[in-house]
Image (cartoon, rainbow, N blue to C red; front, side, top):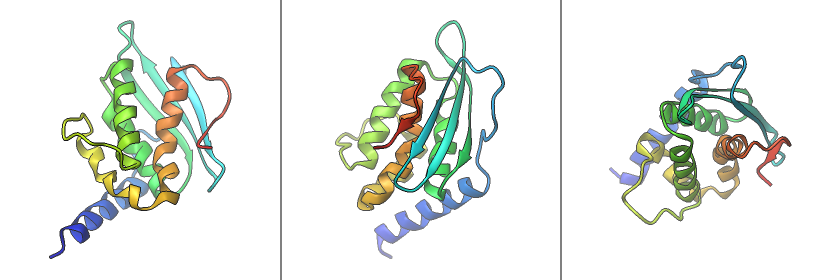
Length: 152
C-alpha cells in the first residue's frame, strides 16, 4: 500500500467528519475577543469567538459561518486544539500551522498534534487559504483587528 494514499484517506476522513459534525460551532455570547474572516477566492466566511480569563488563557472558543469542508474542518479542529491554551501558545500554534499548510514546517518538534493531518494541503495551493482562514481570523482576534480579516 502506498503510504501517501493512506495519508490522503485519513485526511479525507477527518475533513469529512469535522465538516459533518463541526466542534464548537455556535455563536458565543459576550466573547472576550472576536473576529470575522472572509476568503474572497471561494466565499468562505466565518466568525470566531474567544472567552479568555485573567491569565490570558482561552477558556472557550467557538465559530460560526459557512464554507467548504476544508475551511470548516480546519476551524473545528483549531477550536479543539486551542481550548486551555494561553494567547501566546495560540500565536505559536498559528505560526506552526501556517508553516505546515504552506509546506515550510521543517522541524519534527511542534505542538500541532492531530492538526498534522493537514500536512498534505500544501500540495493543493488553491486550498491553503481555505485551511488557513480560521487561523488568520484567530490572529485577527488576538490582535483585536476590527475589520474583516481576509486571506488575500
